[in-house]
Length: 237
Image (cartoon, rainbow, N blue to C red; front, side, top):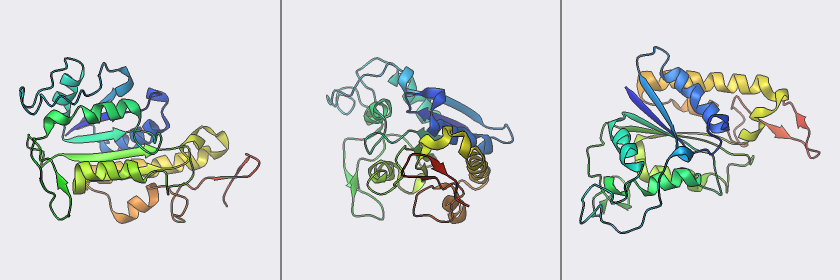
């Protein structure tokens, strides 16, 4: 199985989101039988989409811009599993990540059809994508899930529908606090186990999602950070 990770964080290896992603990958590739590649979006020479639609008309399936997006698309098409690892930036994906998403336009056909099992419409894929699976892994600094993460999650749901698995951890900025290291280790262990489960079943159970999908209104999660009004950290006993 080929796994492609698109890391949208400008912090690259220091990314809180990538810490979660790497724990998941450790579980996915526990038997060392899979190929895993991580590309950092911030390092790529990718220009913004010109909206010229040449990839739909004059050069079908091929963008007229000659930059790193050419080989990114090749890797995207070759992968069995694509993991988008991005922090929440202004209610959505990071800017480097959005640049890549916009430039995936050549993969779509210039027609619109009804989205299966929904009332929505969509552009069908130019290529066979039926066996591909997608994962969104994200963290944010804000403690609330509501009015913070929904638009990010909705974007990927529209893109990938029922082939998408989502892991979102709010309050990710607290990963760096030593006082919470025991909580972080426990949480990342659960994420690793989730990776093992995903490798075996190509999906996560509701119970697993409940453990690793961190939000303040989830009393059953492994990780539950609380900040005091004075800015000092308290442990939840």
